[in-house]
Image (cartoon, rainbow, N blue to C red; front, top):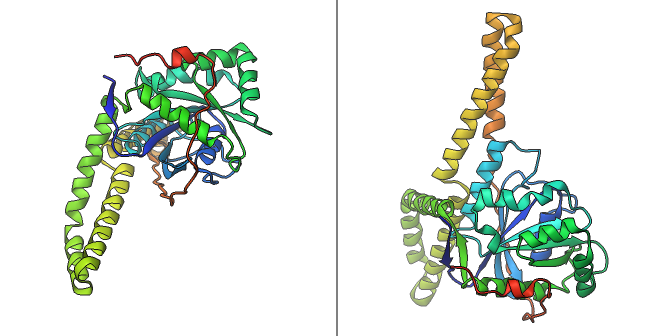
Length: 347
């Protein structure tokens, strides 16, 4: 069951979703104002979380593999969807769904349905469509073009409640940062100021909390030693400052590790590994049948090993970057479907 959950602190958590190709990575660069992903990046093997600022507002941007990425297995993709949820707990304030304004594919049209399947049937209420644009970015002119474009793109935007924003593929173009920040903040406010949550996001949060507790217990001896060392080196206010800094750093490290690796993710990995071994073994045995009983055993073992590798590959990557200071935002919203956008949030 999906529900709204009150947000914590001032950080906005933005879960970026892409169908295929480079759009979500271009969007991430544009939001963060730095080249977090190289220009030719088309896919991502493991979910990532990056910290930065958008027009002065602290943000966490979470990326998962593209929905239609053919370079990873179904089991791997399922695990990375789980990991993206762990990285955005207690839930994202918004989903930013990225497309290329010039390349709307049949797969793109299916994105809303697949998002509801993976994140919950009410997640579309928490979505804004972000359209990547090449060339000089004149916001109003490009948005007017979107309204008059072919029905495939208009129909796609309509499925997300008519909410959209155009951004430049050139991450150095900061001309629309303030407007994007305002659109995000207005939408979060219209939803009651909370974040999106569901039973699976709750499961992710419970698993991360449990892993944090386990890691703190494992590191208790190390913490006690460091605490004693600090007491030997510092006194009075400087001691308190050093202790607070160490506690904050240790807590952040434990949280980052728990988000990237916990029991819920390990369960998904184990299931993917088991499925891969089973399917690989069956296929190997079928091919081996040509060689007779011995061939069935030999090819079954080889197929199981290959299948297990394909089904169980897991990579861990997370980077926290220093915040940047940007000017205060100013509202300038596009008008398409504006009445529908500002309608009172549903219960």
